[in-house]
Image (cartoon, rainbow, N blue to C red; front, top):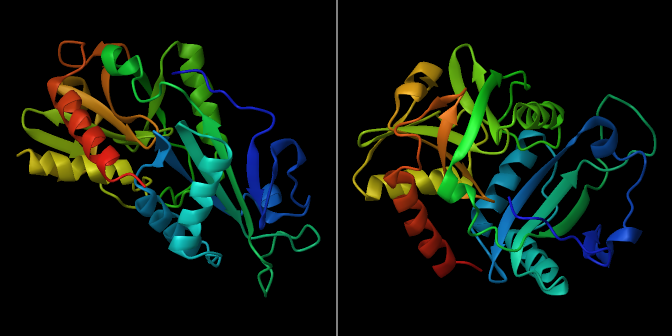
Length: 293
């Protein structure tokens, strides 16, 4: 993955004001900090333009709604804030993150307040030059499987990412790129990507239920696959099915579509990036850039 470049003078947005990152603060009693009572979203930026912003903001709204946190801004207001972060930081390639917490109640109390405080809103950017052309697109990803020990509402993009962080470390120590979670014998998703396999002309990927985060990029992959004449089966699949697949793939906002060439030390297909993922990625990139904001 390309090296990230994060300047100390980056401008970030905190509760109505743009400030240098080094000066940004929130309350120590913020429920996002104390209870992970918060959600987030991340949108890719290419050529200074935002990719699939509307889809990500719609998912942000759904996550907030699931936690009963009022959405503090309209879609247009979110759009203007994202564009402002891109402009103020001269962001050409990278990511914009938005974090929304329930806010601060002025003290620590596990019980939710009867009347919600004002939500805390934070936006910041990460500069990642070259992420449009990752080396892993040519080499493919190597992953291992681990038990899915996350909470039962993975469809909410919560900031509660402790097991995700642990799984990333497991992958690093194993000398691979990432992991796939497995729940009762069924592959759910990766730490920061949706997962799927290709069997001939069929795409198989976990249904968008509470077991996975309904990826914006995943939805684009499914749509493009159908437009290109592939059948798409949204169902759970096993590791054994993945080992025997002709291709495997990961979809995410940051990486778009990436091929997976090895799972648990077993080569997938011929052990090289497959034609399906490369073809659909090319189509997606061209489309995404055309409609970027």
